[in-house]
Length: 255
Image (cartoon, rainbow, N blue to C red):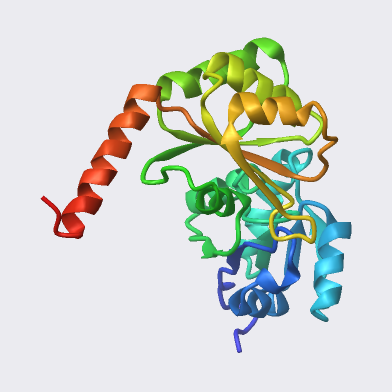
């Protein structure tokens, strides 16, 4: 045991992914880390308390979110350097993926503390896999800006980039977003809308932007939404389909 004159040992900062819906998606490693941590930093302590209660984990909780991260980060880094083992979680999914975490991780690295990442489920990776759209290259844009000028600029950037793009959107604006994708990227643009991933009312809708935009006018969708957009133009999609057919024919030994 360290004596009074011994230098304090640096603690650990864990970045822990938590379920986005189904609590069974949490990993055994994440559960172990949460049980061993001295402190759990949570985006919303009330939501994290539900998760911890479900798995019978009893640890101190402190809030860490976009409204207090500037003020709280320096003191947290000092506490970790003094030996604190802290685990950062967001409300759901992986911290830093459209959630708080970047500022604390950057400060930790600058202080010589290497964060330990505990990977797990993410709405981003779920949507990419579920979309049935090309995923060899894709871009992630987080939440689409609310203000009209920045919103249009972001969608124009997606259109010009010509690859699969993933965006998060509020259910209250998803109908508007689909209509904007149909207008700016193109009405025939293939899209996949993932709603309430891993939850009871999970839904994955696939089609073109114009059709889903029309459908959205008749449905009051609720729940967290992720939209995957195949922003390639028609010629690029047709060329890719021909190449896939040729490759398939070669695999089957056809000439």
